[in-house]
Image (tube, rainbow, N blue to C red):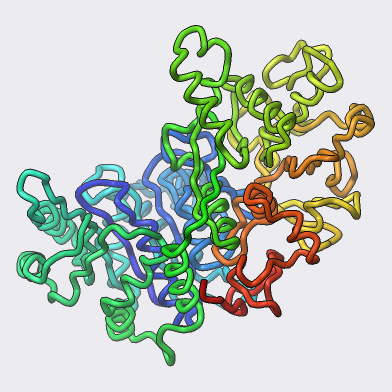
Length: 589
């Protein structure tokens, strides 16, 4: 097993996750089996109780793990399937050590950070690195480990110490360190400043880790003189200083690393068993990057949500939209709308903000209402849903978005004026959305319906079923505490709102579709978590097709796009999510 540790310096949030994913991608393109681990130094057991404004979205895995959004990057870039133990937190480590102490596993010894916590970290990494993440079940050959935060943070010290010991345990030829650091370029001088990186590397070396590659995040490409200066003061060769400047598309980052010899260096440094360089997978990334720069037609989607001030709150949603937009050769424009701005209270208090929000909504080609929690902004979301339904605008509701679509339909079509979710109004006379039987109101963590679960299609004419490839059922990831009240199902279906997808027992409503509408779909699950760059999520794909005016022709062709509308040729242009990432053939646009 080869281990690649990715650390960060100067500031957090400079792209360690993307760089770690990109390193894994270029190694996988060489035929290696790659896995990934994200370490978060916070004391929380998992990310499940975080507000999206804390660390961005909560990503959900097949096994129900609620984890950091970077694991979503790993899955999308590497096309792998991770589990909850691939996200390691301080809380998990301390919990496991304390449980051992309570059982008497330490035989009365004093339990300390060194060696007990550091040993637990090393054991966790070594055990998790061996678990297969690919469909073929083969044990990984390379494990990319991202350490969250920045070097010098007090909470990450036990992890730094653990990897200082770890490099000797697994031997030098099996371990290397990539350090990601910021190279600022002040507007006053326009000169790249290397001092912050020098200090960051000095601190890292003082803690016992010496970086093998220094990846410099910067706004523009570095001159050779800047690289040589970093080389001189950071004890590496100039070829070990890698420039990762801002690019127009994330698809270009693996190509940027590969072009600067990262694969060749890692193969020499870790003695990797690589026979081919730059395989089919990386070719696809190059073609995607080139195509994304040449897109001319534009499609706009109004994202009506609660956490729109931080785009990371909807990372997977945005990626799913981007994947689908690229598949139909359109440039994506996302119009973020705070749902509260659409409400009448905003009209009274801030009329300019109110009218701007409605102008954004009305000028969009489609409407997306993603998941969320809490009552704030729900009335605004229902107003947006009502507008999309009445104006025959493409609409997709995800999780809470689907629940609110049901509430809106009950109020305005069934004329149940107080219809609501018991999450927001427990006393409503028409509880169209109710909490699940297994929900424990007294505890927040791990009390939701989580992970991959099957949804059975109950209608052969369902639009979404056709988009999925006319399958009998699909398996998608869930994260919710509330669900549509199954006792009221018949009232909705009599008026045209069809529950075309349900769980295995037929008790939980999973998919809604509205008759005689261009595209009005709601899903209880989160399809964005399984979207991939060359395998777009069907619900999002349908939304983009409808927004671009191509859904009808796509369905008429038997769920095939014409060559000018897609990246695949006539023989392989299905949008089925089961399509092999290496089998797609791209056309020039």
